[in-house]
Length: 107
Image 1 (cartoon, rainbow, N blue to C red):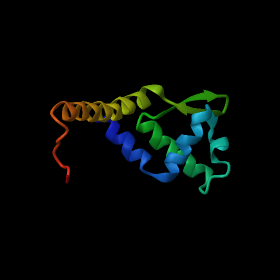
Image 2 (cartoon, rainbow, N blue to C red; image 1 turned 90 degrees about the vertical axis):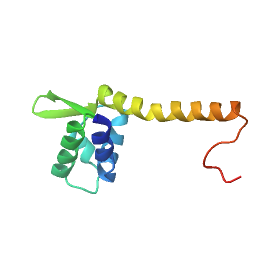
Image 3 (tube, rainbow, N blue to C red; image 1 turned 45 degrees about the vertical axis):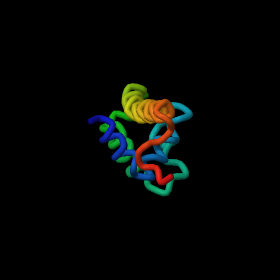
């Protein structure tokens, strides 16, 4: 259940903020830590958790590491979330085709 680990990881607001900063492209820990309410070592720990969850990857650039969003990990999470949307649309369609009455409504 890879998506479970990713969701757990993103439940932390600081980790989510670090992840969101990578949206605009790869960045070093120092760049990511600028303006954050936590220390640079704490940002590194959050990046390690994001990497363990498969959401980010890193590459060496001299003596520093550059972090980026891993499209494979994010793709798995997206497919899982999309499955809810697909099921919800199918249930909506089935409800319309059966006359509009569906379970769970208080009409």
